[in-house]
Image (cartoon, rainbow, N blue to C red):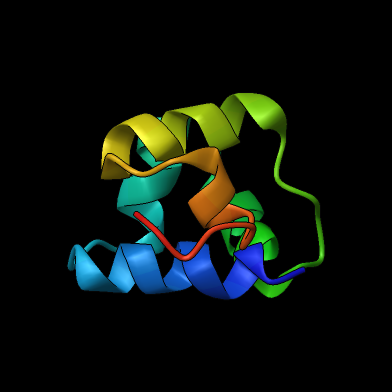
Length: 68
């Protein structure tokens, strides 16, 4: 699950807190933290929102492509 590191890095690079990203996704900070730890899988709807928010492809977040 390489995406857990990638979503954390994207968030930190954007200087956002877990709570701020959780609000964008419409979930709790606790649940978002579980995504970053890999305790819960990231739902597709949240993957899509993160791609749009950060301006990256799903392949990038999923670790399939190194290109943003």
